[in-house]
Length: 333
Ligand SMILES: Cc1cc2nc3c(=O)[nH]c(=O)nc-3n(C[C@H](O)[C@H](O)[C@H](O)COP(=O)(O)O)c2cc1C
Image 1 (cartoon, rainbow, N blue to C red):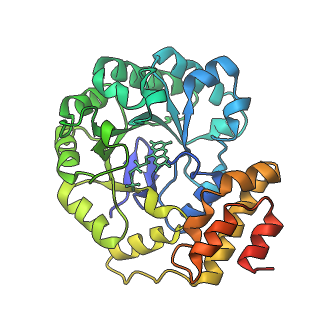
Image 2: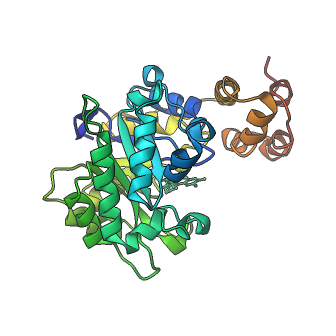
Image 3: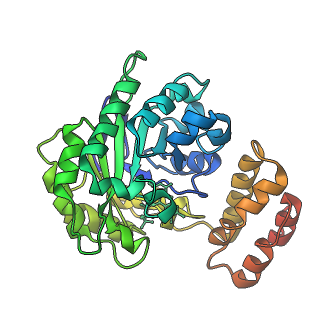
């Protein structure tokens, strides 16, 4: 794929990691970028919580490392433009965070707790408010001496019968959003059923006259599905979510495939175990060991998928309490 510009930020390889709560840890994002991902946003963080509780509670989810990651993006969710204004002011006043390259707004989260507050995918039902939020974010990033782009990640609809929301996409582009990423499922689908490239294409078409890059997302799991997404939607970039869990090599594979090179094989079990430990060690840099290992329990099974005896390994890994125990289970020193 050709490089794209999000505002003034150049993304050399527009194959990005899709933000995932509980998965998009800083060490994992660094690894994905090393494997070729163009950039990797943080998981969603509440703008309201930053506004009213301060940065400390949310900091661990939006920890970025511009030095190690290159391009960085923090994803915020909320429903009140003022919450975004305040949250961004705080971010831009916090060491390291203030160096963030991109602010991304979540307008796709289907979780009832989020939707109930008018945030995430609920914003698809209120394009005027969504546009106000984009404008508030654009205003909030002004005046720091560099143009920080504001991007939006959304879905193809709020209701089951929706087949793309062209007017919503236009409202966001009119409000000045610098990139739009669309996941081809509606809110009630959550993560089930097929993602619809056709519905994504409807939204792509709606904003084709705006000079902003369009990213497509949903069910990309290999070179073939990546190529199909690009062909079906005419997108400028793609985001890969679930297929990257425990498998950062997917960025190397998809990138090679899109460039017409042979996709490298998935590395052997030893290399995958070492990568698991590398991510866990990265998490230990900012979390107490018991918390880091407990939270990593849901991620470890993905790293050992397909191993001989992997069912047994998974059972043991999800009960692990410390890194030494994880190493012992994996039989690595
Ligand atoms: C566990 C999990 C957590 C997610 N968290 C977020 C999130 O914080 N922000 C977001 O925009 N999307 C989130 N998503 C949605 C993904 O970014 C992506 O849009 C979706 O999984 C479809 O892409 P895929 O088929 O490649 O997984 C999450 C998905 C999963 C499975």
